[in-house]
Amino acid sequence: MEHFELIVIGSGPAGRRAAIQAAKFGRNVLVVEKGRRVGGVSVHTGTIPSKTLRETVLNLTGWRERGFYGRSYRVKDDISAGDLRARLHMTLNHEVEVLEHQFARNKVHTTSGMARFVEPTAIEVEGDAGEITRYTADKFLIAVGTKPFRPDYVPFDGQYILDSDEILELSELPRSIAVIGAGVIGVEYASIFSALDVHVTLIEPRNSMLDFLDQELVADFTHQLRDRGIALRFGAKVEKIEKHGPSDCEIKLEGGRCIRSNVILFAAGRMGATPMLNLDACGLEVDHRGRLKVDPMTFQTDVPHIFAAGDVIGFPSLASTSMEQGRIAACHALGEKAYDPPEYFPYGIYAVPEISTVGMTEEEIKERGIPYECGVARFRETSRGHIMGLDTGMLKMIFSLKTRRLLGCHIVGEGATELVHIGQAVLNLKGTLEYFVENTFNYPTLAEAYKIAALDAWNRMPPLER
Image (cartoon, rainbow, N blue to C red):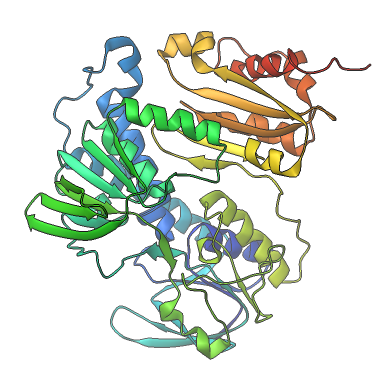
């Protein structure tokens, strides 16, 4: 029986960062990964695959050039599922090789198999051949991530009725797809398939989508989806799903409406991948979605020597935040100095177009009763936007009338997930409207939109007292 100072269960963004941080402290660390290769959901079925798929689609379809050459413009006329997978596999192999090298360089021990607790300080790992190995540790970090929610009323078949993991293995591109769930995953895949000129129906039981975003941004994004021909069915609860034959699926909605499509993607939520961990043996409980409760500052669970980080603890469930959570958790677990999690971090949605946001939404600012002013810039107002052929995209900033500080930055459009970091830096450094008005931005760039939006707000704000 081997003993470690820290055992990390899961090698996704939270697990890998925690393990490498602990190794850099000179600690003896073991990472347990149930898959054959390290990387977790993020590398194999989640973040990296979906973003690679998106980039491949945009490149092969010539999506970014259609503003100049028209909607019929294509880089490749007959795009196949094989074309999409080719780049995917190259990217995933590279990601895994980089991660394996990082573990080897930092002397992080790894083992493959399914981990389960047998007592508070011991786990068993079952390998592919059924062999059992027992390990003990002073501290544990649970970073097992999530798996798709698969309700009983959905007749998944792995070919035409799919969850968000299985969609990456499509054998051929459908002519139509119905996506159930207008959360981040559903919206991303719906817009990606739309860029492939697949007819998309997006179904959401609530009357709105992406409620955590600034609603002006959501309104702009929704308009773009409808303009591209995506059918949005809000307030539509699914009663029954049937498959009548190959590429012939039907969804029956409350009220009698029926939707037929070649393929159905069910993307309405995910569950913590905790059932196999035998958490009863270590005294931990999970919520109805299989997620663990932790201290938001230290990521310590109710069992003092066990920590958890990443998607398994719930919102925001981002690879970026999971990495920081893993590193902070490792510091606290090992008694090392740790910084507090940042108050404001960027949220990125890799739809077509991208959405990214940081800070407070206009709705949150209203609820707090903060006097404010907004500034908006359209990408078509920038020279760079004209050069790129952009006729959509917007950047919105919100400033305090009292302090003139930036309170929130919200972007929808090309490059949003890159552009948002300028707003993030100013926000976290408590910068004001004057930073954007008085500074010079490269020309021509999309980042000029910051200055345009700032001037838009400045024109309506009371003059600065000097």
